[in-house]
Amino acid sequence: MLVILVTLGVHCPTGGMGSQGRAHSSQSDADVLRILRNGDLRGEIKQGQGENEWKLKIVYLLRGIREAGVVTIVYPNSTELLAVTVEWEDI
Image (cartoon, rainbow, N blue to C red; front, side, top):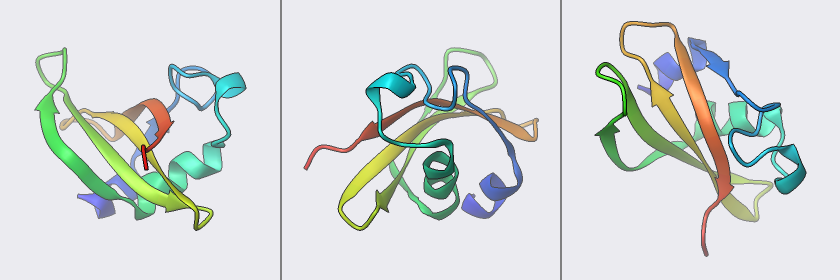
């Protein structure tokens, strides 16, 4: 699945940082792409709010010090996905 994610278009609705907004987060747009390209699925894939969408979290170790996760909505019949939020994982 991650190989597919690398080729998809990624939409970040509020300046790249999902619902948290850039002012509250130290992750950049490049970090979001790095997480999606190199990260691992964390937890279950769940049905999204829409009929044909799936919600999942991809997690990756950023800057060698802490894991960050991107909560993502995947649309199976599309070449795009939606990065809903980016968050530091609890230690």
